[in-house]
Amino acid sequence: MDNRPIGVFDSGLGGLTVLKKMMELFPGESLVYFGDNGRAPYGTKSKETVTKFTFQDVRFLLNQDIKMMVIACNTASACSYEAVTQAFDFPIVEVVRPGALAAVKETRNKKVGVIGTVATVGSGVYEKAIHKLDSTIQIYQRACPLFVPLAEEGWWENDIAERVAQEYLIPLKEEGIDTLVLGCTHYPILEKTISKVMGDEVKLVNSAFEVAKLVNEITESNCMKRDENVKPVYRYYTSDSVEKFESLGSAFLGEKIYSVEKVDIERY
Ligand code: DGL
Image: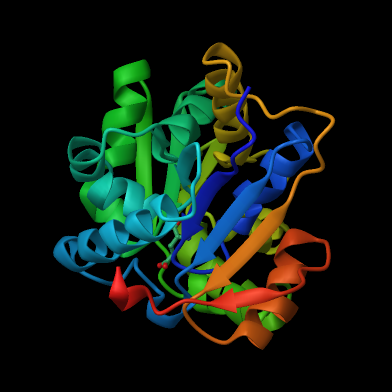
């Protein structure tokens, strides 16, 4: 038994879509979330910069007396997961491989689309991860850099979001994909708009559920579950405006977030 919390981070609010699935699957666990809103987006930055930021995020969470960590950011997972696991001897879960697994399970016609940030798509990690599971799958990728600012702005279902989605996604639809991987943890928040453009015949998948399942398996098999009689605690930190995190973060999570604390992440 281990009553310490699980640490989760993202460049901003997107990782809350993963946190939400974790809360649903194992409501008894305590969670600590860090959103690096002050330096988001990560997806337009170089691998070196993303890796520097990721190491600081990891060091901050390690200071919170956590028992394991989830990199709830595809960009940080794509650019820096290997370096992080080499540097820290600590249980850390990333989001790319679970997302790839979800796509492979879902596709019938073996034509899979992947959307993500410029850094994630450019890294080719999804292609590698999907082909490791099934080398016969055809993959069509597209970077959608405007989706993150739209999500962080709360513009999830308006005309502008739909127009941007059409511009990015119609070429993928025309390839005849039957599955689309939302390879950025911000994108599930735009799911309705994305689905409107892609149509019902294209299944949207994201890694949140597979990640939550994996975390659950790891805590169970290593006797790291929390004592169910002890009430879980949720703590939130951001490197930018606390008020903005509270209001928009609550919308991302679908429940009220209270008492967010500000962190000077450059200190870590
Ligand atoms: N939510 C993040 C991801 O999954 C990053 C978005 C960004 O900061 O560009 O890639």
